[in-house]
Image (cartoon, rainbow over all chains, first blue to last red; front, side, top):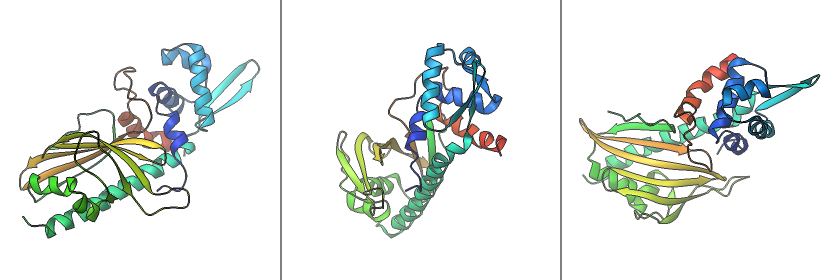
Length: 108
Length: 141
């Protein structure tokens, strides 16, 4: 239905904590695990685990600076999901049109 | 007229049709009528019924949508799971009498194996996420 597979992105963002972390990075730029933990309301190991899932989906990138690792959002990785939403949106609107035609042809 | 109170919905299409709820309900629940506007299917309006919608196969997808009926409330609500390409969603139809006809609302939601957890309430629900998406993308241009 969509050109590229949206699953990894949807899966990564299926968890509300990961959505929160991703939004936090999107809105406030680069941050460390420590900084993210402060906002996320879950433990630091939990945040690290979530970051690993986000990295695998290419939604987050990291860079090392001495002993610190900085994370930032890669919103381009959302493209398959945006595509999926657009394609499905068009699919349903087209089906609504067809439904309207059918209703017109049906007996009252 | 439209009920947008839910926080986890993701994709909504709605329209008022100049027809009775009875007629719309038939178009939504009679397999042969459903096939004429939506997709080929072996649907039956029975809770727990597993069925499939079929699209034309594509290079990386066999075109099969696996579904299971979860809600059948005649003339009011119909709901089924919609699993395509491994992505599990729920399609929910609601019918509401409206001036001059019937308001039909389709909501496709879910987008993940887990249900919406109560993490900081609805703040990080899919809908708020999608609402913020445009802004998020814009910031990075």
